Image (tube, rainbow, N blue to C red):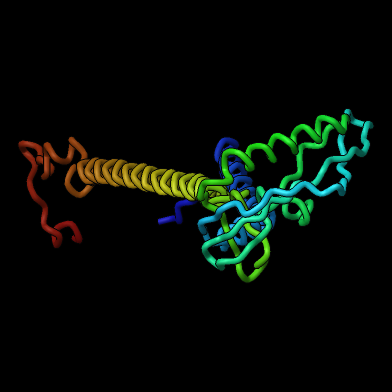
Length: 263
C-alpha cells in the first residue's frame, strides 16, 4: 500500500495565533526583566526596613533654603525655593534619635530635610506647604506614638514615615509578566495540538477511504472472475456439437471395412 501523505502546513488563522502566542511570551520575558530592574529591586530594599514605634522629639525649621525644579509646560522649566523642615524622632528599634523622612524618594531627593514639597513656581506656595506639615507634626503627632520604618544596615540615622513600595508592587512585578508568559505558551500549545489532531484525523480519513477503495476493487475483481468461469469453453461447447455428440449415419448405409476399401 502506498504511503499516505498529509499536509502539515498551518492555516492563516493558526499562523496568526502562533504569532500572538510568541508575542505574548516575548512581552512577558521583557516586562519581567524591565520591572525586575526598575521596581523589584527598590521594592525589596524598601521591604528590608523593619517597622518600629516612633515618637517626635523636636520639629525644626532651619533658615537654609533649598532649590527645586518646576515645570510649566513642554519647554518651560525653572527653579524655585522651599524651606527645610527637620523632624527628629526616637525609634524603639535602636532607641536613638533619627531624622524622619516621608518616604524613600524624598530621602533620595534631599537627605537633610524631612519633607520636600511638590515644586511650585511661586516660592510662597512651597513655604505654605512646608508650614502646614510643621504645624501638623507639632500639634497632632508630637504626643502620639506612630509606626515608622527603620533600616539599621543602610541608613541608621534616618527613619521613614511610610514605604514607597509594598508587597502589592512586588506582586504586580511578578504576576503580570507571568500571566503574559503563561497565556502565550498556552496559545502556542493549543494551536500546535489542534493542528496535530487535525493532521491525524486527515490521515485516518484518507486511510479509511483507501481501504474502502481496495474493498471495492477486490469485489469487482471477484465478480469478473466468476463471469469468466461461466463462459469457459471447456464447460460450454458449440450448441450443434452439444446437441449431437455423435454423427448419425444414413438409414441404408453399410459400414465398409478398411480391408475392402483397400482392395
